[in-house]
Image (tube, rainbow, N blue to C red; front, side):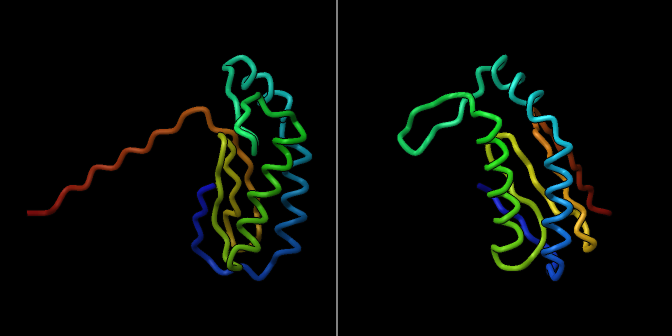
Length: 112
């Protein structure tokens, strides 16, 4: 699990409420269907691999949000297994994403 933090968190209750709203509206069935089609598997504690159940996906998202808000009381993002959970502003807005591919480009030019 990768954790990125950048701002102080003083609004855990709001974040948790927003997380519950986000998780209720997230289409886990669609992600599960994609994972099955791609044969995208997660390993369990015993090294066995399988496509995760919807319950496991939701539990993983809960672990991610807890990693953000209880880690060291800062907000930011956490990701694992394709899921990306972030608290993206000081008002506690929560974003849950499942990312199949991502690319970021940045070209830096020094002024001469």
